Length: 425
Picture (cartoon, rainbow, N blue to C red):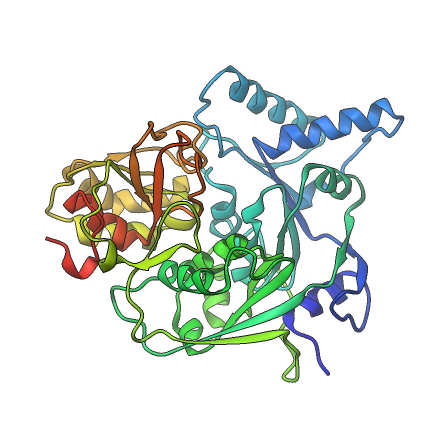
């Protein structure tokens, strides 16, 4: 039997002709990322190793390493300011040129920069110091989040061990309704398989819906494979991928595709023509309902931001709903990268949000992870384009977050309560 795309990338990276689920391999890493939270943690690992006589003299390849300042920027307190300073000194010492510093031109959320800047390419094996590194699998790459110690090992040695995961194939068919976004589809899937339904497995997406889906919508699917416990999410590259990358990089790459006789541990089929807008209720992405079942739930805040929900198309969809209307609750819109912010300004989207009464802020992960730039108070209720809603995720442990698409969040901001986009006033 043949191999699927995840297996083929790991086989190539480990110099093998064939791998199977549960095999353990040592794989060479093409790209590695750290940010202003994971970076200081990784540096701490190096300090501990140095105390044991293992000193980091140089990185395995500084050209393959990149750094994003995104979680606590603009610096929210003395600790985050010190972390950014620490990262700057470290990247200079080890000659890391791709350091995306806030306030110095292009910067943004790491899982947005990875594709916005064409940093991750089809066929590559990419690891990042963040759980949503899975996002980049939409580029036809194998993208995996690792902890501080593993990232430190990769930075020093350029390789790490993997157990070959089983792969679940999700086939999506049907005509996507205008009011449905990729967020609805992935919430539907997580609602069915659960937050542990893909533990240490690859989630691969295919079908005619994927073929017609834009790059940015595909990225939403792979982003939230993390919430199903997946090792990685992946979509085979095609002309949509190649056209998207053409305007972003001149780097050469070798795409990888599944064999026609590839094996999968499970296959799920979804017909999305009748799918309704989905909302994930507190306190889990699997706790789903259709939006119309929740209409009338009063809200304190609407949040349009994060790697999951603040790409350019996300902002366009939100603006389509909000144009010419006024929000009834505190509404925050934070584009996922500076480049997206600029495009949103040129297209007039920022004006739409401001005229609707929303606040538009700088690219940052701050509110998504409950750190700064708009955290929730006790008993506050938020509807958000983000990816997690466990207790305390976006602020006080007794606040509540509902997860939804940009269309649903924008509609809810206009009505001040959870609203299906088809029913916006």
